Amino acid sequence: MSEIQNSIIDGLQDKATLMRIHSIRATTEAGSGHPTSCTSAAEIMSALFFSVMRYDPQDPAHPDNDVFVLSKGHAAPVLYAAWAEAGYLSKDELLNLRKITSELEGHPPASLPFVDLATGSLGQGLSAGVGIALAARIDKRAQRVYVLLGDGESAEGSVWEAAAMASYSNVTNLCATIDINRLGQSAPTMLGHDIETYKKRWEAFGWQAFTVDGHSIEELITAYEQAAEIKDRPSVILARTFKGKGINFAEDQDNWHGKPIPRGDKADNAIQILEKQLSGKDFLWNPKLPSPTDVDSVTTVVAPEPPYALGDKIATRQAFGAALAALSGVDSRIVALDGDVKNSTFTQEIENERPNHFFQGFIAEQNMVGVAMGLAARGKIAFAASFACFLSRAYDFMRMAAISNTNVKLIGTHAGISIGEDGPSQMGLEDIAMTCAEPNYTVLYPSDGTSAWRAIELAAENEGPFYVRTSRPATPVIYDPTEEFEVGKAKVIRQSDNDQVTVIGAGVTLFEALTAHEQLKNEGINIRVIDLFSVQPIDQETLVSAVRATKGRVVTVEDHYAHGGIGDAVLSTLSTEAVKVHKLAVRGIARSGRSGELLEKFGISARHIVESVKSFLG
Image (tube, rainbow, N blue to C red):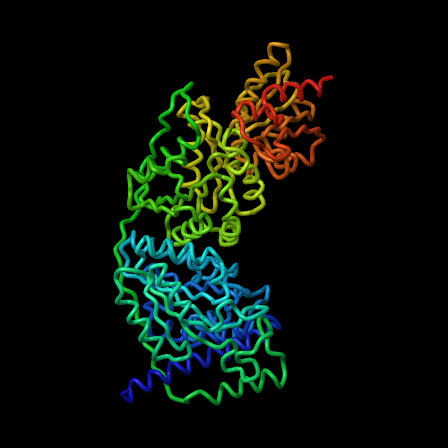
């Protein structure tokens, strides 16, 4: 090896040592954190940040930078240390780790310009990396995506869902690195240092695998260079490392996970030993700047009007598919993902119109949502659709989408018992509770084709995570194509000057409320009927006005479990009012049957609304 090469290797090793020192100092000062998980990855971080990746260290959010995703988010201090050594962060700021006054949180937050998505819930980074890599492909960027995972998180099924999709989709600009340090939080990992089994598994999933000594800068750089030459599959670097590397009393020792080095002699001695390893040579690092890419700008085009006439019958799930395909024709940022139900969710419509903007996620819902999050983090308006019940598999990803305030749009179809004969395993009855529990979600629940179309427009136009709940049965179109809908606004669709009870429905139950309205009107009883449409945020003004007009008498009716649905949303927003609310909802486990039979059996049909209204009036 030449003297120049030796000098470069020495400089990169010094960077690794400095990142170890920063990680120890920061976590010791914080009194918490994961220094041993940081020190095992130091050479990996040095090779990537100071030799391999192309990026502008003064502009971490530059769209053409190579992208780094820290899936093992508990190693955040070494990520912050890398950006400090690159000159973007102040080294003094590293000592503010985990303080409420600092952006350097215990796990990487999306508020930092070099973090696309918040990580820390293990098993999510590779899915995000797949989405980011696909976004680069769409935009034709000469960009590579590097994801660093821990070996412990390789037990997560979502990692292998992402591995399968990356291979199937031929995401060749994606390179994963597994920090195989042998030790988990409470015990050794399943495979320990059995690198050959790791290699066989990744190769079985269609990846090009490279095995290296994860503490050898030379081996790491060679592997990354070779990975960049692979043009027919994604690549993975399997790096054999030691947890706590460089900390003499903690290296490869159990029971040091998530424990800072105590202040005093222990921390001082560990740092002194590391400082003695520094070569003392100057390392003149010249960043590899990214290649600029010309990406077509999005021009504002008037979206097409809903094509439905009053009285038409169409399922809201079908209107969603049609709207998405139509909107994708006027906004090139729109992409769609589906969990192998495209002929039921009608995402096949956008696949037919714009096949390069449709991604089949197959039956792997958590990865589907994670990939959507990655696409959204890179400027795409990402719609991910499946049956509402199956999105519950992806709830942790949905939770992290809220934490990152990601611009991802989730569509749950086949919601509620109204799907009929398929039975309870296919019925989404907790999805409103799930999404409304997350403070950053907008939750819309359209009832007819026109309102479904408008809901998809609103989701595309507004930033942040959305959930749109759609139904299987065809329902009549009750809104004119020119009807305007807003986030946070309900629709009063039946009212008079002498309404006695307010009835609030959404989706299929709105039509049960309309049927009840006609029956009661024939008996001389007027009710006010409200289409909730926007469940979160909710239209407090309209609801308060209605219940005051009907002397505080309210019936909510929903194709959802009683807890956490629209009834609870209404109760919450009316908490300052003197009201009495009857919540009609699905109570108990449903069963197979025809849609109308099930609405009747589980107490959310027009007959039950009529009875509830009459019980108010004596």
